[in-house]
Length: 479
Ligand code: AHR
Image (cartoon, rainbow, N blue to C red; front, side, top):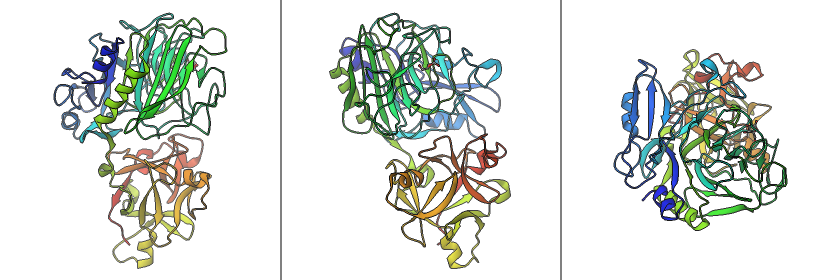
């Protein structure tokens, strides 16, 4: 059984079913997604390993060996051909040719599902997928439901990392012309408790965390590494639900009437489908998508609870083996940029830099370039780096520069000292995304170490050699 078998049994069948990681029907054997490789621009469909199973990531790996691949199509498993492809320009242009959005790098979000390797859809700002010509998706005030699994540690405050129902012309057609799941920490429209990120509903010209525009106290900050996010809506009724996609159930964060704002009752849904962007093709947001569906009809909580049980049983997990950054282990982190492949992240007192370390370096210098990987102080799905020779002191950023400082127990320190490993941006080793500035990665620049955004406002944000500068080879520790 897959999630869509459960929705069908509940009388609210899937009318779109998207996943790059697994089949969403127990009997599905068709293609999950398509990749295109840079070397010769040819494409390859990736199917499940078996009926209802996990994606055949090995087929992608062999097709993309020695080159790079992007995800060109996310197929619709529901049989309605509501596939997602490169989003076209709309109210805003994307960065690719003709104003289209970028396609996702096919290897940027590696994970495992039930012990099998799989890849998610990594949405960096500028990336977006869409289908403006769908079949069977709710329009007007018709009821629908949707869920998606995201990486709860990968988000930002840009507009708008969405999955769901949007306008068919890629323009803002007014309040009520969208109904999509939003995930991130933008506070321009709605927000909930804490600093975010929040699951909200993008209903157009508004992200809603509950009945009120702005603040609603029942929508919590939620950042499970694998996050189940649910939005559903029917005539003058909608709900937000969410939970941990690895264990437990889903909780209800809102369930009630349409918002206290004009234009959202009745709804004017148009039935296009978006992923990673706003309804008007706003492309400022980031996030990671693993699977999601849209239904015909308003699913019951019981149906969704059964879907959540299916999701937790599927066994989503991080592949820390892939990066070598397992809590408890000790490592050294070597630069991969051609200039600097003899340099390691290193400290002298509280100053953090890169330094050349060799077998003849002093024991102190070797220790200064060695780190114990700790469970992330600010998020247990990510990691922190404790100095091997100065116990209790961690790498943390301050004004975007890394320093070695003692943990003062504050929430800010915990956030500043937490980094979420991803596959190395240049294909080597690991890249370390800042937990609280998630468009920034640990980068060396003139041998100093920063958290840097590709093309951001500071000198150290330079696009030159960015992917190399943020990719670190994880090796056994010098000291
Ligand atoms: O509702 C929030 C955003 O506002 C929508 O996603 C976008 O279409 C508009 O800019």
